[in-house]
Image (cartoon, rainbow over all chains, first blue to last red):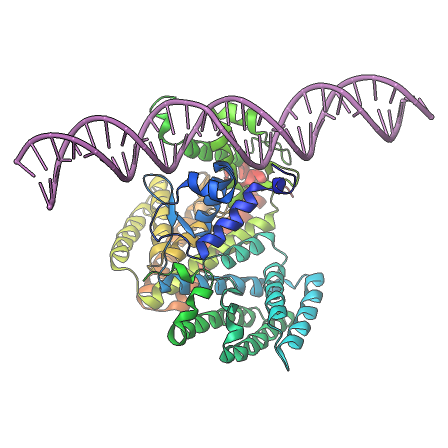
Length: 241
Length: 241
DNA sequence: TTGACAAATCATGTATACAAAAATACTGTT
DNA sequence: AACAGTATTTTTGTATACATGATTTGTCAA
């Protein structure tokens, strides 16, 4: 085993297995055989099982009564619920940040991120930059209230299947209608942060919830208009209904 | 290894280690040495490490940068936040149950549980029965909206350190003032469920949040009046601050 | 041909072995 | 006596071995 790989076999297993699962590489309902999977990923069963435990926790895998795991399958309603939960938790982070006052250093960075987001959405859209800045916005929002427990749980909700703030950004650059949705999202970003600064907790919470709903709207749009794109959205391959 | 033990070494490791941690059996900040711990629990490092991973996830342990874990330590604020989050998630479960309509079978059981709770809080208090019924109330509430994802996340929030609905019931039977708090809690239980049946989502959510606040009130009371009881509340031993 | 039972194979859960990295103890120097 | 550097001992992360229980395959009877 060379030096590079030894960084962490577990991390490697987690990342690669997650991406395999999200790609829909496994037949739905079938058990994931540990031995062959470990061979395929070039590591032993020990870190692989660790990664599987973690993915069970994330909800991507589910345990089989008689042992082992299978890929979980979701209904569209499950994904809607996951998005709803993300909205609820981000809303709580926003409310608490408003009530308690935002952590100054993070608030400072937030203004920079918002300015940068404005710049990348108009007049032309720099999609790659938007995705990265959007991620930072949501990460800052999670931590803005200064509570490590709140931050942890918000970030966990972001990892629920297909609930991530960036989940539906995949493929949006190919759909013109979605560019508007990014501008709308940025308007909401600003509104959320302004409410926080104004110490308007209830408003900040409601706005953050509504912001998550944008993902639901986009999901509905994709399923209705461009179901062929469903495969591009991480996690949507797991939707069996 | 005999037949009994083979049920699951992992489960055994998880339960025993969690209870050791909650008891405050480990010096705060010190690394938990895997080998000696495994010996102590009578199992090998493999299931022990699995259990440690899980407890990291629950927030009871935290990872050390250079490897291994230590017992996490919380501030009182962290525990308040954990309770707040439980309220938020139970509030969401209540709201969604109201908006979507409660699952009939669970709603039916809920009425039975509420009647039983009425019976155990007056005229005399059957404390043991109360704890068990209270647990069932919260379990039903989590599942009432009929969403497995919501149920999962609500139940997860209930496992946050010292956030469980039953955490502060320990020792309440020894404090007369707390008997009233149980009756108040039961009034809230009824109100939450009535709001759900009346499809009053916002009210159900607000009531469930407020219900969780009772735990905060009790926590504050304990810390102010009977700090000696702090050791009896699971998780409070980890509060360093 | 279908179904049930038995044998064999396979997969999981657990224990253990091993190597690399941390932590600790030690030695020699100033 | 204090400190730097080194050797030693732990300890972790990973691989592998092993046994029990699950699953599949094969065989035979109806």
